[in-house]
Amino acid sequence: MKTLGEFIIENQNQFEYSTGELSRLLNAIRLASKAVNHEVNKAGLVDIIGATDQKNHSNEEQQKLDVYANQAFKRALINRQIVCGFASEEEDDFIAISSENDNKRNNYVVLIDPLDGSSNIDVNVSVGTIFSVYRRITPSDQPVSAADFLQKGAKQVAAGYILYGTSTILIYTTGYGVNGFTLNPALGTFYLSHPNLKFPAAGNIYSINEGNYVHFPQGIKKYIKYCQEDKNERPYTARYVGSLVSDFHRNLISGGVYLYPPTLSYPDGKLRLLYECNPIAFIAEQAGGAATEGKNRILDISPEELHQRCPLYCGDKSMVGDIDRFLKFN
Ligand code: AHG
Ligand code: MN
Ligand code: MN
Image (cartoon, rainbow, N blue to C red; front, side, top):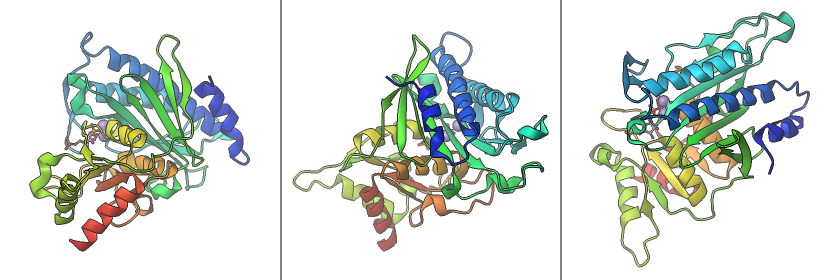
């Protein structure tokens, strides 16, 4: 079976004038993900579960694993001088990285949700990491600026996630389809287990936190009722883990849609456009699915702020189409 390392090198030629820079970046993410996987697996044995006394930019309590995972990816990407910029859900602002060697200036910025599904850590339920890669737009002899990070999702060069689940799987796209690699923990090697992933033809799962039902827009309330209607053979069923990576991955493999609408506590939805919605949307589209904020394609949104939130309807294309119609006509 092909390893992730081999796959990255083989696919380097898809990019004209490739210098191997993106390959090095993906390899750094592969390495850091193994460290985080190891730490996640030890939760309960070592002092890694529970909260810190810190809050992140979005005023959310940082978990110890949030901080560990952020450090692991930051170290892998910054210390090895692999990227020119780094932004994270767990950092207040982006970090510009200058190259010590003028002849070897880096061209990519990475945006990351180092640990997705933090509320699931303490209860042994799957968590993940989500990453997004852009090519810088500021000239390479200048430090990166906010504009490099605030590009439309459609400009992503690569995106992926790691799901620390029953097994650990790394999924990524560089715009040529989506491939999945499962970690063999005994060898510490990722193997190509899910080549050219596509959503199945007819999805039937809807994933939403129904605990927020009373505050959902009318169209979403009606869509949920439509999924629950008992007409002859009701095709729909609900599944909700509460970590986007897990919910999205299940829907990608089994066929379904993920919804995070605006709520009372989160009038713009809870998920972050840059660290969660954009990378997941890129993967969804590459797998034959769709992602909107209720009307427009997620990847067409012009970001204004690093930590901005956005509603997300993402997964099976025809289910996303149904949701957009329910929102439009209700
Ligand atoms: P994070 O742990 O990175 O803050 O993300 C949590 C997100 C996402 O993973 C999940 O889908 C969603 O929050 C769950 O929200 P609810 O608890 O409101 O359902
Ligand atoms: Mn998250
Ligand atoms: Mn997170």
